[in-house]
Length: 582
Image (cartoon, rainbow, N blue to C red; front, side, top):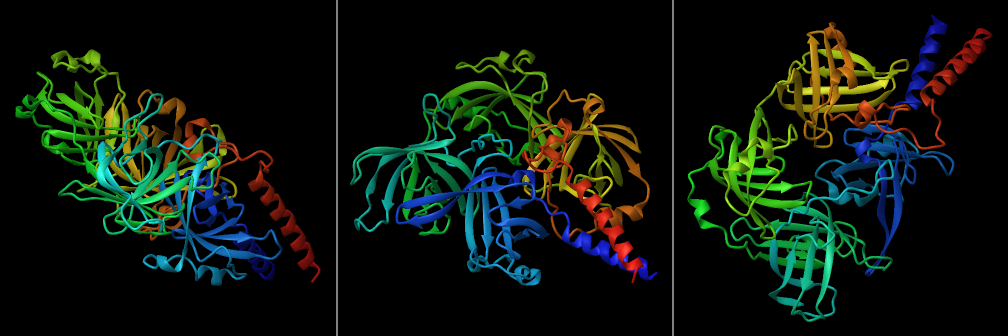
């Protein structure tokens, strides 16, 4: 008994110091961080986030809710700090910490400095701007939330003059694409100001919720090219719902704090007034055509109200204003529409809208568009087979139970040492949990929490559209249910991609019948914190690349879990031999 007790203590210590702590795939990549700011001169440092470390700050030690403890032991000893890391857009991470100049040798002391919501003023804020992904790919472009054409006033608070530099509405802003470019940028043309006329182009990197119904907007200044001015800018903006006026203010550097108080008070301030659109065909507005009542409301990228749709296209980065002209004869899902983009280009086309679940719709815009009204725009030939835009409802969500109940387990395809687990929560059937772990050691590589928004059957397959709760993204899964005890499942991308056969490419999962295992081992009945995506597994398989993630960087050990197990066995044997002689 004495021997077993000591072995238990050894195992506990081993697990304590070698516990799993990893960063989600969405957080990984290469970023730039403002390191020095002197006046208008800003310098940047590179920050790499790997599967289990942020090398310049330390190795991932333990997650505490939305906080994480990092241990830096490069300079001898242990330096422990607490960081709060939030994904604000695909290209932007917001980090809060007590300070990079402070660290602790005791874990409890570092934990006491972790961010508590509502007390941001006590913490240092760091904005990380992504420049490359984990496979060295360039960071993706982002949709600009300020779209259309505007006249604007402008002022800069640099102390050079007292009056507003652009006091009249003579300058112009738009997000229209330039030749050879796209519309994921804001084009500003300063005219009639107290300085020489010139142009600025800000690439949009993402926007997120700010204080008091304002929103933050991250921008990249294309004029940088080695100059000392800030390459990245942060702004606050807000639209007056009555007048349509947009107020926007920028900080003086690459943080979201310096000289930035609100959308109307900052280092640089803009007042934007929309110039409207070109001449709409008024005959189109006399139509009694209405979109289906069930579709009305706010969705991810579209807003449907009665006879109009506002579509924020995150693929082409343009905004379309769509007006219903008439429903297509013989089909209550297709509608002839008149549309205009934010730059005034207008066409006739057809939109096909299908209800897929309680909180899910899909739509297609016809491939052919015309300057003239034409009934044939809604014909079958004008739609590409099974290529849809999938959308989840943002407001007044109805509870939609996930298609699976209980706990299912299986192996990652072509990698039998990686185990997968999928489970639903009896008390909250709209929630689904997923994890990937090492089958032998139990080391967890991936943990995710989903809310099911809706599911439907098509072609003998079940499609389930979900909202990932830990980082607020939307994902689709396609499955084949063989029986109540056996299923095959495969990721189907952001827009429920068709043509994927889960029997050939997916993962086989079998149901476990012991409810005790679900409650005690997999997930508590009432989770108190979000789950985190974690370590990049050693040998991922392509069918599950977005969940199990890409391989390690070159030079890293390829069998770390197994190596650790060997070390543990050796140490255990040595320990047994030692205590045998006590």
